Length: 296
Image 1 (cartoon, rainbow, N blue to C red):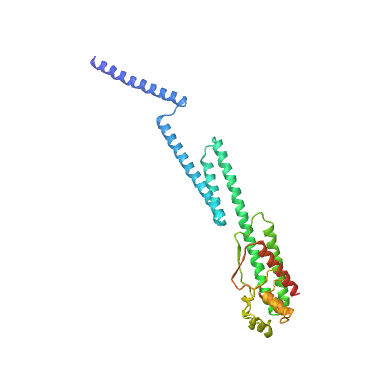
Image 2: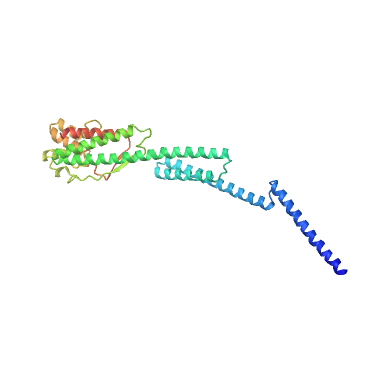
């Protein structure tokens, strides 16, 4: 009898536990069906949201910083740095889009507008840089042909002088087209080209140049002009040095020697030549035209 009662008592406990478990499962099912979050789920979601917001804020800050760097670099005419910084800004803005939820329409629109504006600024700087590089190469070719033409003329190589003056004329004309056809000032800052002509004067001393006869060098020496660098071009075409104009007026120089000395006054012995204004390019173009005419 005692054993039977004990068995019934144990059985009741087991049945009660089963009923409790079923009830608990039923309650959990109702909570899930109603869309309610468990505390653990809520904590996980809030942590993820905080992490995403922090990441987006950091990316936005970096994007704006890179954009400011790009603007400053452009103002300082550091086009390569400006292009790199604009590219970095676009990449950060794009990363923000990747982080944003698809439902965040207003935020996405704002970032997309920032991307479009930054890309437009980038394209402007990139175009300016490309045009300046093209101008630099054109002016380099023109100036080198110009310097070789002068040397060839003084050496009596009229055919080579004519060819190189023509090449210089055409290249300077192309450079003018680039400068005048651009909405930007391509010569600000000045374009500095390296000059490496394949012909140079044998000497800068006028008395050592066969193209300048001894009587002319003597007259020039009396005027304290003995080197090519001391021949200073005038400001008006055909830009003869003042000392040359004076000696021609006094019949101490003939026209041929005067032309040679005028061309020599255009020689630039430096390794670089700078073009900082349209008038500088225009003058070189006119000088090349004059040289071509004289060597024809």
